[in-house]
Image 1 (tube, rainbow, N blue to C red):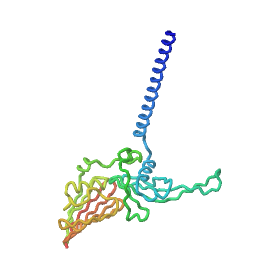
Image 2: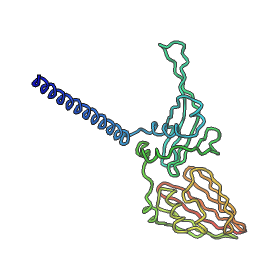
Image 3: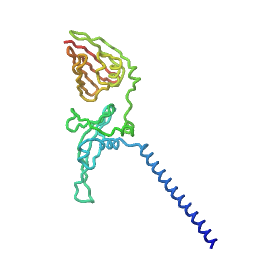
Image 4: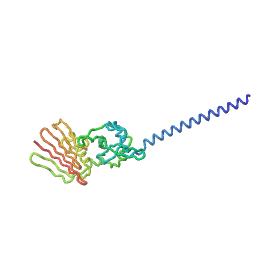
Length: 266
């Protein structure tokens, strides 16, 4: 009887140890699996369309609420602007075997990489509506790499831009300068103009060159308003003073940018 009790006790202890070991292994396996899933999620390379689909789904765009499934197509992409087409899919067939899928566009958006702004241009491309979205996604994924965007001219390159063929502009009630700058970037030339105060009251200009037509009320230092007219390869800036006007024109021509600054007095 005593011997049977000892054998039973040994089997019980062994069984408990085995069960405990199995639970620990299962727990460890789940922990490793969760860790791996998290790592894959954080390090996964997302494609351009899926990235912007996540951006759109996190936004306050009305189409996101009005439609169950919204898809995103990259209409065009550049370092200055990414154009997005939002569409839904409808099955018009009456038979489940022969599907007739039709796509319908429901919205058009512009994403501006420099300012990280999402603009709704569906109603009027000239007067876009800025949308809110989860900007944490911009930190989580490298959209520039996913969308194949080339890096901008570096700040160091911007500071070292050289000017050639500068000539003075003079006339009745006006003065200024026209220079040809060795650069293929309007943004870099604009930044240098501000950093080096190459135009009077440069501190009142926007820190970054806008991508769309913009007007800013200033009412400081005699400046009433500054307007920006943006066209492909050309930017025209008008600084309206109480007693005059400063015209700034940047024109991209191949590997150079022509920078023209003219001060007009009333």
